[in-house]
Image (cartoon, rainbow, N blue to C red; front, side, top):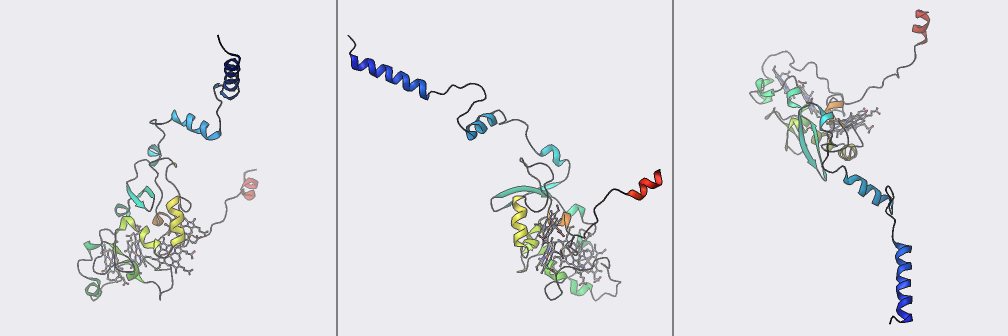
Amino acid sequence: MISKNSNIYVLGSLLITILFSCKHREGEYHSLTDKIEAESKKYHGTSISSASYIGDIKTIEITEGKHTFLIPERKSQITSFECIECHTKPLKELKNIDLKKAHWDIDLVHANEKIMNCATCHNGDDMNNLQSLTGTTIDFNQSYQLCAQCHTSQFEDWKGGAHGKNIGGWSVPRAAMTCVNCHNPHRPKIESRWPSRFNTQKVKERE
Ligand code: HEC
Ligand code: HEC
Ligand code: HEC
Ligand code: HEC
């Protein structure tokens, strides 16, 4: 015989089950996070990747703090690299040779000359590399480390993708332009440009 008490118990638990069980109809989730988690399962291991947008630009991988991403390689893009093709001797000795100014096209318009000259970034004894303010060697491919010494806030923003520009998308592998892709290190100011706009004169001429 089933007692009256246990009948109530069975009925009660049935009610609870009905009340709290979730009807998992398609497209219905407990919360937004559940929905995102469930829907994104479909995409794991599939082809969402920035690789195809990066194209055939030669890149190098860097890790700065908790950020790991790609930046374009530079050395193959610098016209007068390798520098040691001419800079076989320390700069002091080269400068004694009676030559026309070799880098006449480089005009330093950056910080004032009390703060900055060629030797702030280039090492006269090791011309194929850049150097930090404390004399540490910096590779030409990682010249952003040079800029980061003085422009900390832009550097912090750049690492996270807030300053600068991604080459492909945000998904891995993420590739971002490096400082010298946009700023000439010798003349870093980005000149202001007029917005392009509808040319009423041209329209008149066509009529
Ligand atoms: C075609 C030969 C040649 C190449 C290549 C070359 N240099 Fe020079 N560079 C010279 C000569 C010659 C001088 C010394 C005369 C002068 O000051 O112009 C010089 C001077 C310099 C100076 C000192 C300028 C000054 O006013 O104090 C710097 C800095 C420099 N070079 C950097 C570089 C770097 C960096 C590279 C590679 C990216 C490079 N050079 C590649 C020939 C060259
Ligand atoms: C703020 C740091 C900085 C200063 C100061 C600086 N340079 Fe440079 N220089 C660089 C960086 C970074 C590059 C490589 C840029 C790149 O990747 O295109 C470079 C590239 C060069 C090159 C190779 C350019 C080419 O396209 O072939 C020469 C030559 C050079 N510098 C000479 C000089 C001379 C001469 C001075 C002083 C008048 C000077 N630099 C001052 C950072 C600096
Ligand atoms: C030794 C410190 C130092 C280094 C290294 C340095 N900068 Fe600067 N930079 C300065 C100072 C100081 C100013 C401010 C000049 C001013 O306001 O007149 C400046 C100004 C600038 C500006 C603003 C220019 C303008 O007038 O709007 C840009 C962009 C810039 N730097 C980019 C770079 C990049 C890119 C590098 C690396 C290749 C770099 N800097 C390396 C000190 C530095
Ligand atoms: C995709 C291009 C791009 C890249 C990459 C880039 N910048 Fe800039 N940067 C700009 C533009 C555009 C401005 C705004 C110029 C203006 O408003 O006049 C700027 C402004 C600046 C300024 C002037 C102050 C300011 O914030 O307006 C500094 C300093 C600077 N950048 C440093 C850097 C450094 C350091 C890096 C690398 C860590 C870097 N930039 C990478 C495009 C770039």
